[in-house]
Each structure stands twice: as C-alpha cells, then as structure tokens.
Image (cartoon, rainbow, N blue to C red):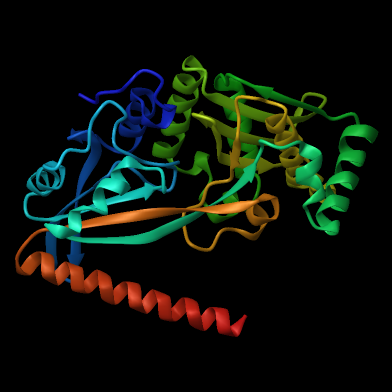
Length: 331
C-alpha cells in the first residue's frame, strides 16, 4: 500500500497511481517506489525488468513523500526485479530518489543519464515581463491572434477545475481533429489512454488539482490545455486546437492567456509544457524560460547479466550521442 504524506503533490498520490494502474496495468509499491514488471530482450534472450510506473503521459516521478530513502532500497528493488534490471524515469533534480541513487554507485552498478527536457515558464514574475522577453515575432503573433479571436470575434477564455464526460468528449474530439488524429496518436485512438485521462480528470478534480484552460467561440470549443497542478507547478499534459482556426494561432493565443492567468495566480510558480525526450518540440520552447532536465536511473544486478546489460546500455548511449552530434553539425 502506497504511503502518502499529507500535502503530497497530486502526481505522487493514490489518485494519480490508481488512474495510471487502471489504464496501463497494475503497479506495486517497493519501498515507496511504484513499479511495474516487464521484460528486456536482445534478440531471443529475455530478462526480467522492473521499471517505474511511468510512461509518456507521466509528469515527474519520485519516492513516495511518506517514505524515507533507506540504504536497503536498491537491494529491495533488485530483489523485486528477480535478477533483472531496474529502471526509474522522470526524476528531476529535486527528486529524493535521484539524490539517493547518486549514492548507490559505491555498492551497486548504477547508470544515471538525462532522459528528457521539460520546457518551463516562470510564472513568479508579471506576465508583462514574460511577454517582453519573447521574440518580436512571438509578441506580434500573440497580439494579432488575441486581437482577432478575443477582441474582434468575442471568443471567451476560462479555466475550469472540473471536467465531466461531456467536456472530456469535446477535448478528445478537438485533439483528434488535428495532426494527432491523422497520426493515430490522439487520446481517443487508444482505449487505455482514454481510460487514464477520464479517471485522472475525475480524481484530480476531487483533489483540487485539475486545471483545464479553454477557448470558446460561443458554444464551440476552439482550443484547450489539460493541466494537473502538482505542488506549485502546473503540468500541461495535453493540448489541442480546432485547425479550422489555424490562421489565427488559437493554440498560441490560449497559451498566452493561460500563462497570464498562471502569473496572476499566487499558487502557481511554473507552467510546465512537459517533455518526453531530449529534443523538445519547437513550439514548446517558444513559451519557455528554461528547460528542466529529467533523469533515468538504471540499477543493474550483480554478476554477468548486470554487466552485460550495463555494456549494452552504455553502447546505446554512445551511439545516441554520436547521432545527436551528427544532427547538430548538419543543422
């Protein structure tokens, strides 16, 4: 049973992990670390694999706030992995689990590598300061889009703290109407993902952690940002817009209005666009003041199996670094 301290961020609470487990498979608590089981393979060879209960829909990960990172935790994780590898992802610099893992290498074989970059906007200053720091082109695009959609057409912006089935259906339809629908990667294209966001919306709303920014043209939904408040960070998990309004940049307009609302909200310090790789989407970077690095910790068992997987992962990391360097030189 996951131990949760009072006041823990929502993404480390039961509501988050219960929604995640119902959609993507059961997670178990090993020493305050929520994990799932799987297998790693090279050709026909398969080995047990224990990983954090995370995937591309995750925000950040850490040890449960109600549990201490004791010295026996790596041994417990390896024992639970049954001779396999343990991989924990989406750890930021403030994660207690990352701090603990940095001390494991004296007794265990551990690799800690950058896993993703998460573009963030600092909302502790005034919105006017944030806007002034954007490029001239972005400022013009935001002002022109807002002038056309809000001032001229009378579109309405709001932030809701709950999202029932009718609104979620609209959100899913708007997302699916764009490039994600054409690529088959929209929420509505995958039953497990739809289950996750449906359960998450209800549980986050009940916990006071749901924030859904909306741009309306009368009764027509033009754009949305689905966010979860995690402590003082608003994590934007899904965004979408109606492409019939693309000439007026409704996604830009909504993001600007939402950032302004976050800057005016004393409970929000960071507007986080999230990231699942080391090359964030350019549109996310246009709004960002910085990028937070998220890390992957891999814990290897002792003996030849652990040594072999360590060598494989090291070779893959070197190959990726070489490819990234080649792309950077060609750019």
